[in-house]
Amino acid sequence: MRDLVSTAPRRCLAFVSSGVPRVTEIDAAWDGELLRVRARSESDVAPDAGDEVVALFDDGSEWFELRALYVRARVTSVEPSGWMALTVARTNAWDYGQLRVTS
Image (cartoon, rainbow, N blue to C red; front, side, top):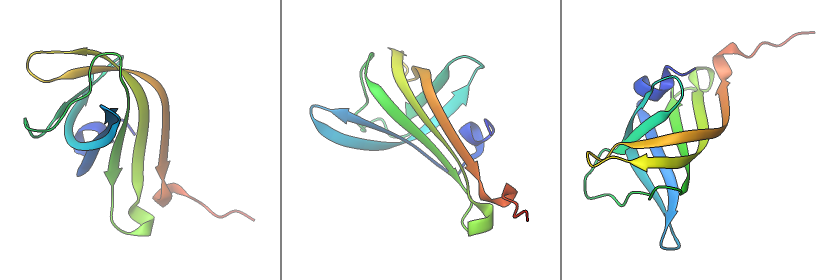
């Protein structure tokens, strides 16, 4: 479900900055080892290197279309261009369209 990283219509990053929970829309790419993200708006507050973050990539609008990828990670580095490299700690994904009832 890594395709959701670049194709999901709803992509966001959640983190805590100065004790305040923050959520920002992101652009993202997965290069095989590192997840790279950047805030879509330059005015958004961004996490610092070493911060723990959660990225959510959400697709679909009807129950049978719901697909999502949840990623818990740590910010490894922040580039001057705004791109952040994340080291992934845990992932969780679901695709309700693939659920099957068996008897």
